[in-house]
Length: 96
Image 1 (spheres, rainbow, N blue to C red):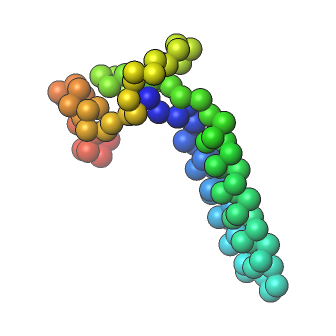
Image 2: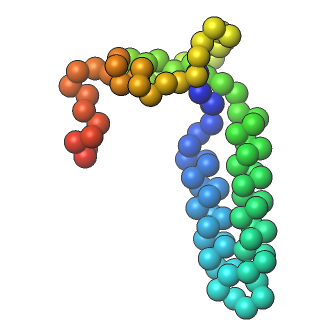
Image 3: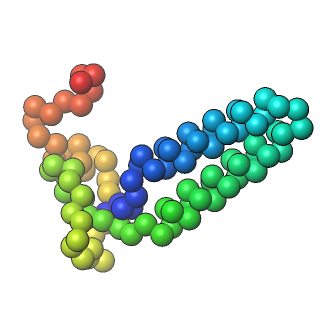
């Protein structure tokens, strides 16, 4: 199981907040507003993560199984188990 949270949304929130922080901290007396933007982004990211549901993930293909009830007997996603069940020709470290 893992959170049903689109990583691109989290990255987008962080990227926008970082850009706003850099823009605001470049102006005199606006650095405090930059920190406020960063704190607001952290709060928004945490809230979205808390509100996101859980989804089961297939270890073989990595596909999230949406729309199915998540059993309480399922454990959190474990990358070492996913590595064990990854298909033999699927080398993700070759830079492709």
